[in-house]
Image (cartoon, rainbow, N blue to C red; front, side, top):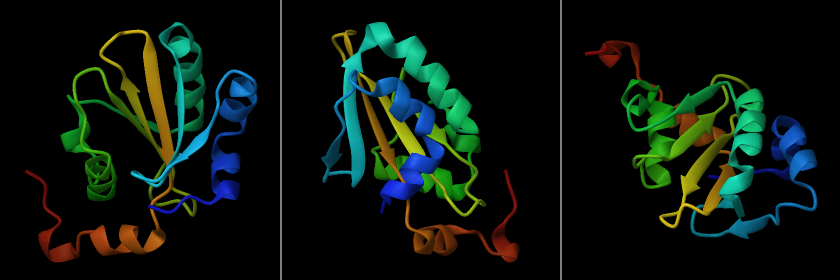
Amino acid sequence: MHLKKSDLEKISRELLSASWGVLSWKWDHRFEAFLAEFSADNGDEFRAILEGDFSNVWDSSNIREAPDIIQMCNNNFGGLRSGQLFFTTDPSQDVFICGAWWPWGDGRTISLRIAAPAKELQHERRPDSSNGSKA
């Protein structure tokens, strides 16, 4: 996954603005994503902002219904466990951003990772017309 700062700023201006002085963003080399950790007390506020910026919210009950590119990106983050969320923009748009929302086991902290998969990956994973049927 490759994230351009300009892409992140376009899709998440409100999140960045709301988090200024509250969240400390750093680069997570493991997932090639921006990472912020925050108190679960602020979870509702940040989740509302994310839901405004991202067109889709996936969880462990509906991720199997997601398009292949979204499932691939989610798998790059290790998949979804109960309580975790995966936010995505429309993958057909010029800028595709995803966000992994991971509450910690202690119930007090949430990690948020924001990334943008490379366009090359999106084109590689699009199903061709011969095997595009859904079960």
